[in-house]
Image 1 (cartoon, rainbow, N blue to C red):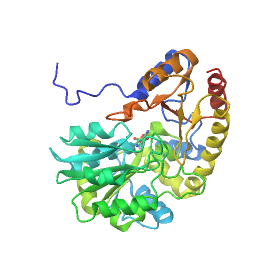
Image 2: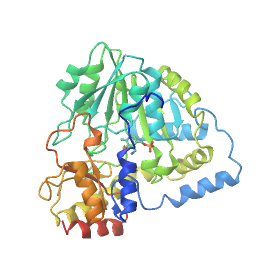
Image 3: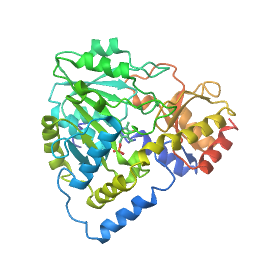
Length: 381
Ligand code: PMP
């Protein structure tokens, strides 16, 4: 038996719940993926690229046309145009980008401050780099950061702060004030920022996504990570990107180069064409998901689950205290096996889950028929 480098890591909760959903023929609102089609134009672009022979290695940093399109989109949306040669790197999903950024700057013994509940790939990447995750809990009701607690967690060994807005699992969003506070906290320190913005375009009620790229002081020290999987309903393609200043991108690319070297070439051509041909896709995404959110929340009101507010992203947290006193892992198993709806417990997103928290995560990136089928079952609770 090898000595595990990740002794605390098992199969991710998303795979566990998807497997359980399949075994019990449950409606899978657990793992976060759309069950509707990716845009036909994008799929056509992929086929066209493969038939045109774009099947060999792409440039290590990403094809120029895609980096150019990303730079243009970033300028349009956030008012800052990154340099496509030195600041934009196409990656095999946001997961690869997060891993690379951490490997690039976190040394043995360094600390990385993570705000819990946190997406589950963060801590293992920190540990593999020899670093130590320092967990600071978000407010258990609003999922807002307590910046005083974050400030108290920063010290001489801190190498990075990780933020995520819109937030998985809660949908909470950082405000402009939050971003200014982050700038204050990190000023005159050697602490890098990793801003996970994979749900950047899934924002509701006219509220603006506060990308770190909007803030000159932040973008000077940030790896900003995006995912085409979320924006274009194709999580299985695993294509994303990282925008970081030249010195950070140079180190990031050293890891990327020997991790994957380059990302799936035909998809890069498909996205390059898509971004140019349909620049409005990302602008319509908020309204598209807001309609799903509102419809799903109205339906949840007819169940005994209590929906929490969802400012962004495509997850709905529900408080199930009126239904069950099981802990969240047991509740989600019970819900899947006995009631045929798969959900994700929150405790795996925590180092130390808050005692007595009775919340589960449901994904509403689904066709109406899927959500209707889930609601019909949830009404029986
Ligand atoms: N960060 C967050 C917050 C996510 O929710 C996800 C996907 N579930 C990722 C990163 C990973 O994105 P990708 O699939 O592009 O690797």
